Every structure is written in structure tokens, then in C-alpha cells.
Length: 318
Image (cartoon, rainbow, N blue to C red; front, side, top):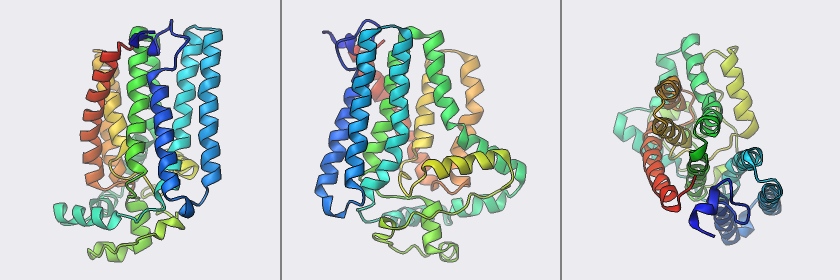
């Protein structure tokens, strides 16, 4: 078995590199859970979820072994994409036992900008049409993922393995950071502290407040707007006080844009670019992130893409 067999149409006897990446992440988080087992809130459910992911990956591998073709390859990748929505809220279950760090990040934000941009952005731009654009940018996250995957599948199939490896692995790089860096972001921290104190530049250390609290601020803007409703549905389904720094929304979307640039398709790149720009601003507008989170997301997205692309090239992923 050569390294190129890790994610090629002819490979049926080995796990893909991205699947091994996920298994390593599972082992990593189980080790973290073991270190803080007495403080974990739902440890059994967390272990069961990990078992379900392992069984799903094995089942899809067996399906691909039975019928190795483009369709089962695509289904195998889509199954991995589904696990992302399971692991994102799980980062909160792991890191909630650690002392919250938002007071540090809000303080750094204040030192850099002399204010809290996330608190002021929606006040400076309160218009309904503008909030709808911001919400559109944020909820475009998932369509952008699907778009880039299917573009590679239908238009650049020879590089589909590379694209899916880079995209899915980038999520788990961010998740690996989130489980040990408990930063919730403005929508949770501002509510817990009180916006009057935040506006006054008071950023108290909440220590283990988010161990038992997960209330968040309502998103600003036109509450009756279509995209505002979609944003609320998305948040209600999976948002937790976790994963603020760096912004994986900005980071992963940066990876997506670099994958789009790699295709050399101007139509694809420039059709996605407006949503990427909206995404970068919307994360701050809707209180999801501090500005430093978005900047860090952009920079880490570039680094992660370069590292994973080089790794994919070394493994000759196709």
C-alpha cells in the first residue's frame, strides 16, 4: 500500500488520511477528558458519540470496499462532513471544565482598538438591509463548504481527495485548539458580564461561569428578516459558548477561498468572494467573535491551508 492509496478511487483496503486524522483527534480528546473526568458533565454521552463516529467511519469504509465507485466515495466524504456538526458543540463539553479566558481577549481587544467593535458595530450600522447582509454572510458558511466540495467532485475529480482532505482536516485543527482554549466570544461573555460594564471597559474573570451557563445574546438587526431567522435556527441547533479564538468561520472560509483559487476558475472564485467578505465582517457584527478572532482566523486559515496542501502533495492525494 503506497501513500497515494490513502484517498484515491482505487483504494479500498486502507483508511483515508483524513479518517486517521479524526481517529487521532478522538484519542486526543479522550485523553483530555480523562485528565478532567471528575468535572466532566456528560462524559458517558461524549464517549458514546465518539464510538458512533468510529462505527460510522468503519461502516462507510466497508461500503466503499463493497462498491468502490464515485458515488460511495462521495458518500464516504459526506459522512465525514456530518461528523463536524457533532464535534463542534462537543468542544464545549470538553473545555467547559477549564477557566474561561474571555476577560483576557476582551481586554486585548480594548487595548488594540480602544473600544469593543463587536458591541458598537451593530449600533453604528443598525439598518435592516445591512443586518440581513451580515446574516446572509454568516449562514453562507455551509453552502460554501458544499459548493467547493461538489465543484471538485464534478469539475476537478482528480483533486477531489486533496480538497476533501484539506477542508475536513482544517476543521479538526481548529477543534484541537478549541478544546484547550475556552473562549466563548462576545455573545456569551457580554451577556454574562452585562453590556454596561463592557462599554465601561470592565472585563471580569468569570472563571468557571460557563461550566453551568450557556445563555447568549440575541443577534442584532432586523429580527423579522429571512436570513436573521436562518441565523437563529443555526445558532439554536448547535451554538455553544466555545470556539471563539481563532474564528473557524473565517479560517475555514479562508481555506475554501484558497481551494477555489487553486481551481483557477474565476467564475467560482469571484462568485464566492462576496460571501467571504461578508463572513469576515458578520462574525463581529452578530457578536460571535472579537475582531482579533477574525484576524487570527484569516491568518491561521492561510497557514493551515498551506500545511495541509503540502501534506496532501507529499501523500499524493487525488
